[in-house]
Length: 454
Image 1: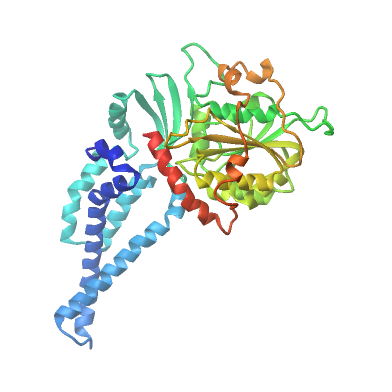
Image 2: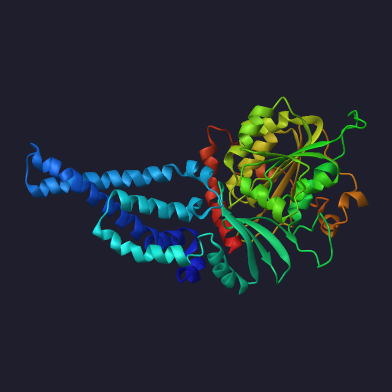
């Protein structure tokens, strides 16, 4: 808590480094030393009793060095296994990230008992009983005591495969939000007491603007299918603002979300209708399996989290798969969140324009003045799979679903000329082979998002 006061001054790079140095590093160091000592006690007699030559000092140094190396390799292997561990995380305290850290420490202690472990007993007891990061009813109350001072109440939290997912109510301003680590996945205004509505007002205009795919007029030569239910594919759920509206409009909606906790919380805390098809899977795998088999009238691509975009979902190969899943008159809306002045934004836009021959670009709000340091916003690209005009019909009362937010923000307004991106930073596009280029380019955007969230 003491270092938290200085988190903004330390920044997104030095802050975590210093915090880890005074918290995790001592435990890791002592654990590694204890494991090394235990391993040494087993191996050194074998070295001394054998035919090894040299002084006892040399033999002792070699055995310590060998065991320390093995211990550190085990630690690094544990880090590499993070992807598998995240798939196993659950709500139970022992299957949370902090619980796994404690289990790992206990395992080291059992395998390599040592007097050095006495130095970590008190910190472990303190962390187990009083750490707000351990998901227990008591620690939730402790956490809510702190959050209450800032106008928030924690409703639910759980470690999952994309990060630390939490749902909070802001009782001062009257809204509910879902977070993934420090990133906001979405939120909605809490209706006045006594008012019942299955579709609440979103706090972000961008999710409403994505629904404008329904307003894009079909090509004049398109043959309208009478009596056939429209279908939509939503890549990335958040709190479910857009798919909930699709369901309300009678559209057969399929949601692809990689994080099962996000889907569960969207249903429990944000009234996501259950009459949809949910695919809890990596979108790349789903599209690879479904392209050429399923086709949709509308596709929503909205996968921003944590200041960066999942790069695999912006490669030319993935976007071509989505293109194959659009019907002839279909429309896709792709949301990109980031600093539009950076190279990463230009790479994404050029890739989308390379795959889809007809697109129009709209930013969430007005462009900031030239002297502004950043231009962090949402950019939505409305595209067709074939050449043709993208014109929006005038929305009707039914399109608004009784929502004031939709009356103000459903129709896209702030159009951006595509040449703003295509004439900047060369002609790079994103493919599976060169996606590492976007990884480096997104670093500055992620830092910018961190500052925005502060």
